[in-house]
Image (cartoon, rainbow, N blue to C red; front, top):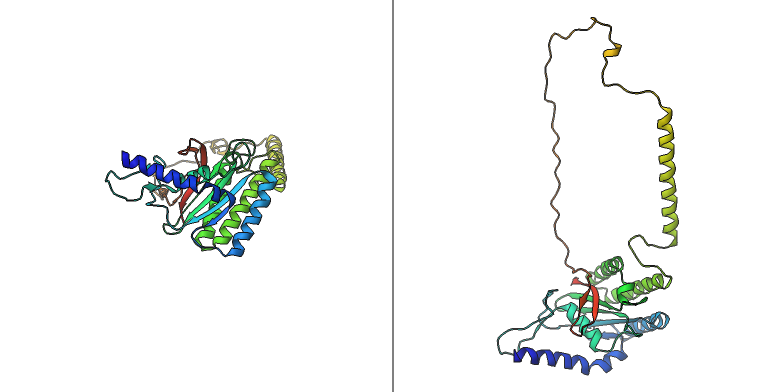
Length: 283
């Protein structure tokens, strides 16, 4: 137990000691994936968005963060042995604590998002914080998180790290713009043009139903399943009858397979007691 407490204190002390340094930089390329020019360009883009929406965006790359164990049920799991082995740290928890203890987040709600990439284990995670009108958990709806993760993983798998980070920043800016307009980025939101298109489709469906009902009312002829009314009595006789099997139809449905490698974006509580949401997985 003493080893566990000491490990936790050492980890938190490290994060707190780096808080002042980290808070000054929003792009921490500790894994050395970017050029100086790329870091500066990302920083400029983030500063513009942060100033416009009072929302923090942080990009962090690490080579290694410990024995990564993605497990939503536990933040830290330590060995019982009295050795100096690294604690098992989930990328979600690491990202949460890095955001909380490094002084990130803007405004009273400390609103913002932090993207973490771990190169050795090929893990990624992004954590969002803030429940206010422009808070991270309000801006990053479930649909927004799903799209952001999809775009991010596509770039990471292609080893286009600069493109992945810039794309994530641009996605964040898009979600912020939608929220600033008083709306939420849901599955049904893709811009004003889509709303007009949906309105046209709904109008067409309503018109089609009205015309179909009107046409059906004009058709007074009714079909009959029997031919008896049209047969002259005694003119037709059946002397033999039989049933023949023609064919059978079998429908097969494939069992769904779990091919995903990412965690859901449900809300969670970090070690600091703050509420976070986000997604994580491997690329």
